[in-house]
Length: 153
Image 1: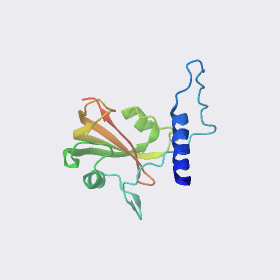
Image 2 (image 1 turned 45 degrees about the horizontal axis):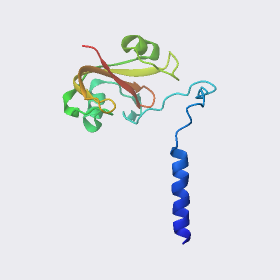
Image 3 (image 1 turned 90 degrees about the vertical axis):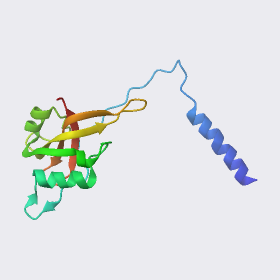
Image 4 (image 1 turned 180 degrees about the vertical axis):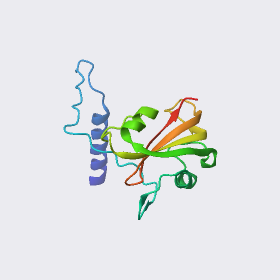
């Protein structure tokens, strides 16, 4: 008997929470976070060796072949690393137009330019789109993959 009463109570609570706001209620704006933006941690990717992170075509290519790229619907074997360059965030922003919230302009990153077949999907009901060029940005200190994107042909 107690279990049934609890189930009904939980079901009624769920219905109350799922009820949409009334039409006459004014939506409230979200408050932006306070303080300085924090640095993005990224996804573990490149190995940190005793001398630091190796930012080269071979190392980035090995990572992509072993793990693919996040959200890439295509095969990892179809992604080619064209070049990898160590530079600072400000230079990466200029080259590929990235938004580097939380990073200072002088922080070191690795910019990998990619070619081949990159396939990304959007939210349903969109269809996947194929790109021939893209980029990946790695943290030059931790080796983490920070962001990736596509580039126009």
